[in-house]
Image (cartoon, rainbow over all chains, first blue to last red; front, top):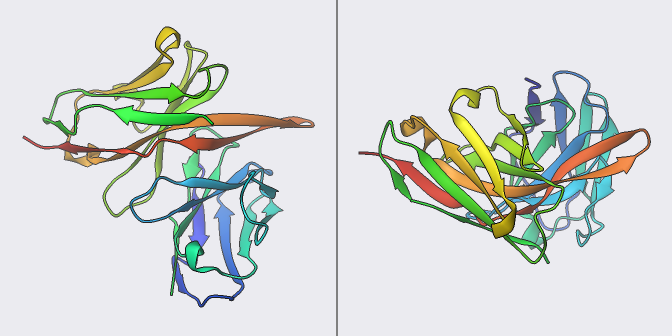
Length: 106
Length: 124
């Protein structure tokens, strides 16, 4: 299985901060990388697919980049509603696998 | 607006079979990769597998020997069966729509619609 490793596992930030989360794949995953946001007690929500394409309705302060083994999710200006856990997920190899999550908190 | 809703028993006894259904509303079941994902308490997400066009399935090898997924097109729903459950199968189970988009030269896959999740506890 492809192992997805996110860093950091958690971070503290303030409203207005620029936040960067990284995701590293154990093997090249091309651009087959998706990002999800999960708030406590809620289902995950798709933010970005194919590494850099913003899902419809997702604010433009979210952006994704990278290819191969190294990927980044950036929130340009953190908003109160962005405090959540973020997961990367590769869909290049079966089984699809997720990173362990990055918790963004105040 | 497509919506998904999981249903099934919240409590299953060890060694028995966990059976869940996901009802699809606001759209047809169509040609999507209907997926199941689970999340043990306080932990991350684990992809269980998907069913595509009723007959094409792909399961996580870690669960493959115990998992069966199917689609009931006439009822616009799909289902998950997980046999011989243990306490390690206690989790929130989500159903999701796997979608794809073609960017030359490849199809890219992602899960764009999720159910709210249902909690399943394995206990006697």
